[in-house]
Image (tube, rainbow, N blue to C red; front, top):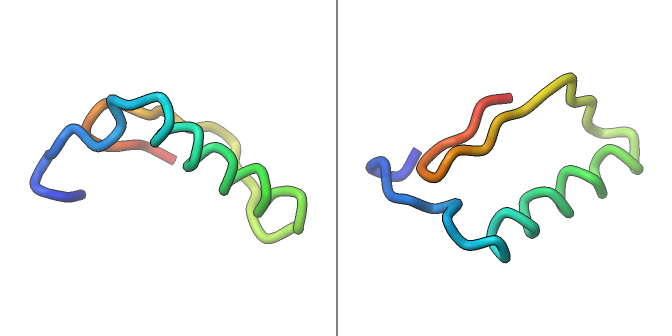
Length: 44
């Protein structure tokens, strides 16, 4: 968390995050069962 700043309002920023998760999943270093991305935080 970064002082509740709206970090995820830009689609490009969210896409970087999603691409990173996809990479980690392909490499076998991450298993996600669900996530929620809100404008100022996320839930995994």
